[in-house]
Image 1: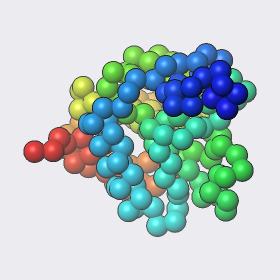
Image 2: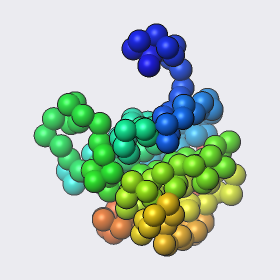
Image 3: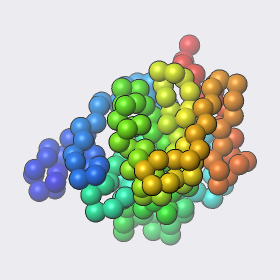
Length: 172
């Protein structure tokens, strides 16, 4: 729509279930956590996955959200010919501060319906990671809450361990 002039080219919107959703501006803490995730997961990748930040994932004809981070199956053309689809995603991460309600009530069900196998919701106000696994219809069969002192790792790569306290720490 931006290409045809319907939306301004710099509009922060996502397509979800056929609706155009306005996205809140990214604050410094949210942006910093995204950069920290990129650094941590890039350092652990060893060629096993690609790190994708704030890029679209195609969930069907009417949904193309832009999660904060994804670990994707490596693709020879680096996804230059198409957007990734659910089957390409090892892990999808949403960083939620002001978007917590939207992420839980609209995005999580859409990710489950598409079959995204694992979603982490970084709940910034609670300084916790909500880990969702086992997609089933429009929800997840497994939910785990991780806090400071816990470690998180993607189901597909249990050796890629992230310290929750280190991930969610504020700069001093």
